[in-house]
Picture 1 (cartoon, rainbow, N blue to C red):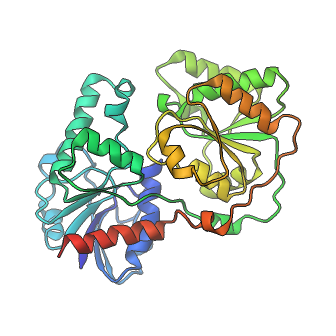
Picture 2 (tube, rainbow, N blue to C red):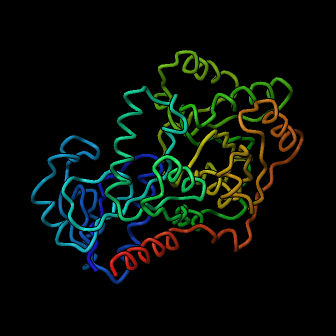
Length: 358
């Protein structure tokens, strides 16, 4: 079987980029041939694979050209394959072979206040177009599957192929890394990440004697917002124990996770969310909001939940977990360490490809 894969998201920040980068080696390790669309330089690391052909494609996903007038040269190569797979929900026009996609979440119709009305219309156009053109939609949790079916209907099959993290960095972490009095947050300023809730809880806890710093992974520039109040608040809080790491490499992020006493994920909405799993694999306890997807994904894990959107409850849990206590490393049992991995994700996707091509 020859599979065309859209690799234009290979260097994207956030979950889409991680998903694309981490799934690709498992695809290439299978007994299939591949046509990889994307930047030749960014895909140079796969040139040693005899089953991979790279075709340069610099067309921006979701652009007018991508949607209506895609490259004839690239289309010809795609349509010589058995199927086309996109790890996101962008689909070039005129693809004549079966199309498979991954929709990680469908947050915009569920939280429409995140975008303008025209922005919501545009996103819904692409969601609905993808659902119409795809043979199968993969997603990353049962929660996301239910929301996709609710918002887009059940005509196109939706399969939960789960999600995972890259565990190779954990093998390089030295055992017995000393814990520091750090609370770590990995995310952005978007409303659904719940950073404002964490800031409220953290400041109140500090006032009541919690002597921990709050480490926000990323630079201040990455947290700029049209909401001047939030931007000003973040700047002011540098005087109150808040540390911005600036841009860091993945290896540095994993070390920070291992050194931290606690990761807090105060999200109001997620499709899966990598940071809690990354933290536990690095030996760090986590405190997360009790949203349905976290109950699903992390229900078996030794996590602490707090009431979604409730800064008072978050503060109480921070004090309970950290105040007057020495931070300790978390050790996950092998069963939980291996529960989510990209090998399982790709195996499920490939099995669906086989079934879809019978």
